[in-house]
Length: 278
Image 1 (tube, rainbow, N blue to C red):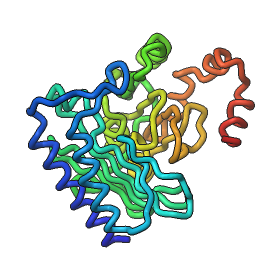
Image 2 (image 1 turned 90 degrees about the horizontal axis):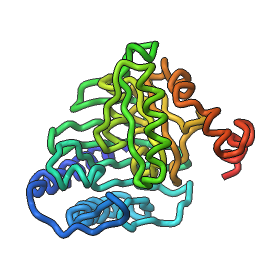
Image 3 (image 1 turned 90 degrees about the vertical axis):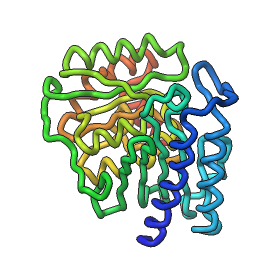
Image 4 (image 1 turned 180 degrees about the vertical axis):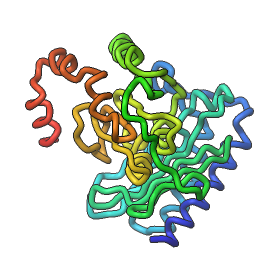
């Protein structure tokens, strides 16, 4: 697995050169939804990575953002890829852009890589071997109260949910030191992993947004879950909270899951049961 991991890092770095070289170009923008875009570079980077990973582990499956979704089979190796997390940032030459890639099997992430090709920051982790930023070991922050903490958050593509998430953000902001928003979920999660952020939350994330970050954060000593505190699925969309572990329950309480339960018309018990059954 070490050899596969090292070769995968090399592939990701090469793909990052495509992004870095073309961030200032002009593109045909393909809308996927309101303020949700894809460019030819997204497809080019995805094709570059996928073709090489197919040769690296023949017969492996893919769950990738740009129309590359194999049937999920837990026993088979599964690559989970976002070729450009932060396409809107990329279009505006805003340097918060990543390639996010994880390899999973039997429902567990074996290794995760999040690479910002603009800043050349490479976050990575293998199961049981710790987390690293450019080969330097990273750990989460030691902060234990929200008033000591900087919290990241994200906004949903579905703008009908914007009032809800802004209300949640206000509730957290009133209790923490500051709030930050950069765009790519993968970047926020690894920023928690290295202590630049103490926590992070967002609605409606896809596996390619968080799969790599799961392992990087856990190996750095942090915790990541859905908004009820349950483990994240690696094959479907969910809401995400990431933290340095110390403030995880405080952040869940600040977001106020009981309010969510009332809106949904469900008790916490029924929500947890529905997650287990899905």
